[in-house]
Length: 224
Image 1 (cartoon, helix red, strand yellow):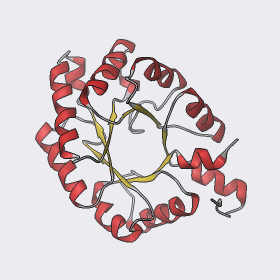
Image 2: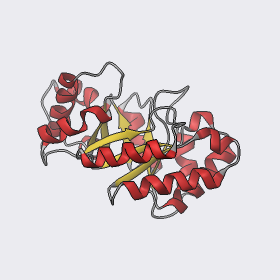
Image 3: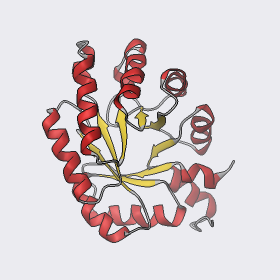
């Protein structure tokens, strides 16, 4: 198992409602020490985190989180605010109600609006797979591909389920060649993380992987 490769794919995550700055700062310290891809944190801490991390770690935040049923204007404002505060990456939640109603144009238009508000920063689109039918998942692969977003992401981690191997395999089959995959929610072991990557996940949204590696290594951080 290539621990460095797994860590380099991780968006080290803390999104709980109770998260404090002290906890976010600790998350950042661990992310820097273990060379993760980014930290994924609540929008209210982005500016502080960017000032603390400087250029040592990419800052990812969430938009329309976790339910996705805000107005498009609200999501665009959130995105512009996050980018102004220093966010390097944006993870947005789609409007699942629009998708369920078959209003695919509204879903696509909203993703494109947030894409524009990102001003060239990485955009990951959270589709909350646990709430979708297989047909809806395939449709979202098509819409995310058409939108110009960088990633399709399985889950918020705040609904009825998280990433599954089957969903990552489905994504890999149906997304366009320029769309990457982020598996998030419920990644409970290093073996699971490794399998998600083998199936095609480019990023892993997880709060556990760094903790597991720390336990394995007795608190000593990886080198390189």
